[in-house]
Amino acid sequence: MSFFSSKGVCTIGIELTNVQGRPIKVVKRNKKNRNLYVFSSKDTISGVVEIQATKKRKKVEHIGIELKLCGVLESNLESGINTDLVSSVKKLATAGALSDRKWQFSFPEFNMPQESYDGINTSIRYYVKVTIKRNYAVNIKQEKEFCVMNLDTSIPKSVPIKMEVGIEDFLHIDFTFPKSVYHLNDVILGRINYYLAKINLKYMQIAIIKREIFRGTEETFTEKQTMCTFEVMDGAPVKGESIPVRFFLENLKLSPTYRKIAKRFSVRYYLTLFLIDEREKRYFKQNEIIFYRKSIAKIEDK
Image (tube, rainbow, N blue to C red; front, top):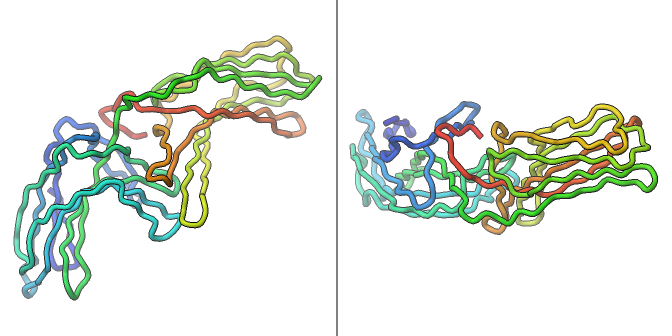
């Protein structure tokens, strides 16, 4: 168990106990990598809390000690816009003097339907937090974070993708993919067909673009991030040419698609085709694709 000093009043340690054999998720916190144990919805979250009072201080009074398990939607786009997704509170101690104490805790088969997520400006975090409440001083808090990943049992219906880029009498290109739904370790297969290309194309790229959409109190914020870019063609195509496309998702830092979490947060992905001609003019088409989680690796760094 790791202990953390809290304002010179005491040290607090929180340890999760049912972690043997669990996968580990590597996350960045305060510019350092941290390993979080991975749980799934309906797992039991259990552990130990230990408080050690600082010996050299006079007696410290409190008005209660509680333990809270919560999943929170956090955003730095607007101050104070944190939304509890799930929470449960256990009372560890009633009012009294702070002393050395140890408690075991358990949140059986806890419902955690939303996955953990670390985004550009928004995150979903799960943790257990100890709070020592005080009347005339700042409350003392310490938390232990863990990760939630859920295997998708309800997979959306997949449909073929066909997108066309065309300028009458000058350009006619389409690209086709047999499905629109992929798991996070899948392979995207497709084909690009050239029917007419009188424009001097310089190169062509396919990209996966992520959009984070967060609805604030007064406005909606959208952040875009290019997750990967693949160069399909360098130089002018030939009429009738057909180019196969294959790229692997396994090593990309992708998440499942999220839709309207707490009615305010979504993560959506788009397959986007870019054409750039010799004048640097850009033509593009895009289509939404859906990602879901099919498996959990022993060490997850996505």
